[in-house]
Length: 111
Image (cartoon, rainbow, N blue to C red; front, side, top):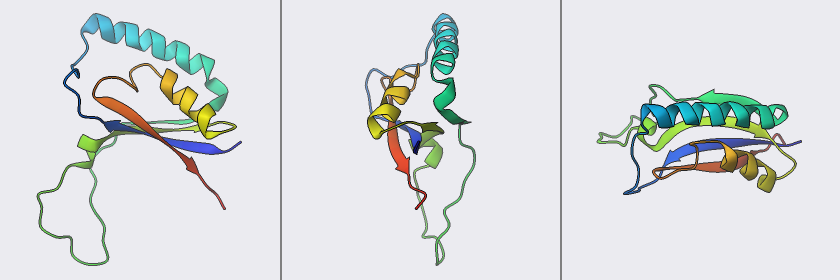
């Protein structure tokens, strides 16, 4: 089965807000259920990204630059029969697709 990279991205939204503690508890419960449902397809749950640096063939130009962590919130790798199957796994992940956040699903080609 092919693997797919799922990249969580910031999406401009007027509706984006931080969840309350009760909403976070509910989100964790739904996330645990989602993990159990797709256990066989979750290759790498990845996580949030930390500090990074641009690497180029010449000296990096002067900034300002958008911080990658402001654009990319995290990643995971899923295994699925097709792109549509990988999208289904990502779409059902609680909190991944919400106001202010979306996910880009990309096939990882090995040849």
